[in-house]
Every structure is written in C-alpha cells, then in structure tokens.
Length: 335
Ligand code: NCD
Ligand code: ZN
Image: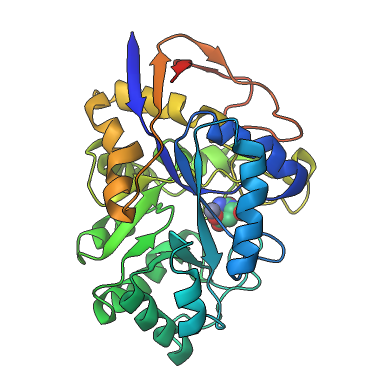
C-alpha cells in the first residue's frame, strides 16, 4: 500500500543553532516543503537582523532540499510600531512565551495583557501579523493550559482581526475554545495525538516523552485526535519537534521536548490510516496551513509505503521519539 502527501508543512519546529541545527534541520527539510521555525534560541531571535542571520544559517544546511524556513520573532516589549513594520514581510508569526514556562523562555512576558502588550497586539492586528502563543499559566501542571484559555478568549475578543494560533494544544478545553472565535487557530503535535501522562510517568519515567505542555488524559488526547482526523480547517500540524542532547534528557532536571522530526510524516500516516481517515491527512499536514498562514509552499510530493521501518536509537546525540521501535510506514520517494 502506498500513500502520497503533497507539500507537507510543519508549523512549529525547533531547529536550535550550530551543530544541533546542522543535525536536525536537514531531517525536516528532507521531507517537508516548509516549517515554521521557533525563535527560542539563547538569546532569542528578537529583531530583523537576528532573523535574517538565523534564516541564512538554516538555509546553509537545508539548501540541498526544496524547502522554506518560515521565520518567527520572539515577542517582547520592544516591538514598537516601527519595528513591527520593519519585520512584517519577513515573519510568518510572532511567538509569545510566558516567562519561564518552557525551554529558553526566560525572556518571555510576565504580564500577558499589559498595556504595552495590548498596544503590540493592536499594531500586529493593523499590520496583519499573526500571533503564536505558548498558552500555559504557572499553575498546577495538568491545569496550565486549561487555565490559560481565558487569556486566549480576551485577546481574541479584543482584537478580532488578529489571527491567533494556540500552539501545541493538549486539552479538551483548548479544542472546545477553538471554535468560539473565528480568529483562533491551533497546532497539534505528533506525540499529543498518541500519548498521555501515563506514557510519560505512569510506569518507568520516560524522559524522551517529557515535553511542555505535558501530555494529559485520554479524553484530552481523544479530543485532539478528533480535531486532527476530521481535518478541521483551523488546525494544522506543528510537530514541536524539540531536540535536546541525550545527556540533557537522561539526567536529573530533564529538559522538555520530544524529537519527532525524522518520523513525523510516517507516524502521522500510520495514525490516520489506523483511524480510516487518510483522506484528511493532506488537510492537517498542508492545505489548512496554506490557507491559515497564507503560504505558497515549495512543490514536493512524498510517497510513503506501508513497509516497516526501524527507528534509529539516535540521530547524532539526540534520541528520537520511538527510538528502536518499528513503525508501519516508510518514506519511499520524494519528488
Ligand atoms: C520546546 C523546546 O525545547 O524548545 N520544548 C517543549 O517541551 N515543547 C519549547 C516549547 O515549545 O515549549
Ligand atoms: Zn515548541
């Protein structure tokens, strides 16, 4: 059995920088037409100069593939109207992180709905710049995303022409909030379509499944699956593939992030096939994103075949999702 995907897009990726970028960026550019590159470097991508330089460094290691890195800037209080006008044509979204909530977010915002931030939201709305948000509060870990929902609602209501993406949603509450406002959108990762907290910490602790937001309950996972499998037009695939070196995962103080990039399309195909919804995979992994973000992706066709593939134990010094396991689909050709 074979299956084709055209122009796949990953709307939430972490490429990092230097050797890690050199290792992981080609593992995405190989099979995807484009990916939305998150700005949480150390220090983050804050302005046009950083963005252009980072984009060049990514292109230097992905130019062998027909691939576009779509860029983001880290949301901060210095985003004046002039700065926003300057970066407008170079960014696909601006990414807002609450301070300290995830990897490299210490430069994030401490008060989301401050007057300064509202002025920035208003300018972004005027200029047609999209806002991506890591939507978690600092509450009890299982409640962080659900408790963030009022913030999404307030911003969506007050700025009805601002397109807001709820990044990597993990809860039933987020799935329910999505359709309340026409300007709210969402991305969903691969792992959150499969795992729950039980897989992460129910038995032996699995550091390579630990990410932010943490995987939740069965009913949450099922709500996300329903959105993705139905090809809901406001939802796109965003892997949130977030590589960390093995020593930073297998230690006391495990870094958050699951590295899924090398097997993302194969496992998505497996999930959609198992659920008899293969006809909607193209929407989830490409056409929805094209219309939400207004993209004209590079032309690429991925042919997958139903043939077992054993996931490597490691890519460089990074342990991937499903390391050593056998998955049902393989990449056959890329054209
Ligand atoms: C991401 C990372 O490592 O950069 N980690 C994660 O657990 N998802 C940051 C993020 O998207 O939260
Ligand atoms: Zn992320």
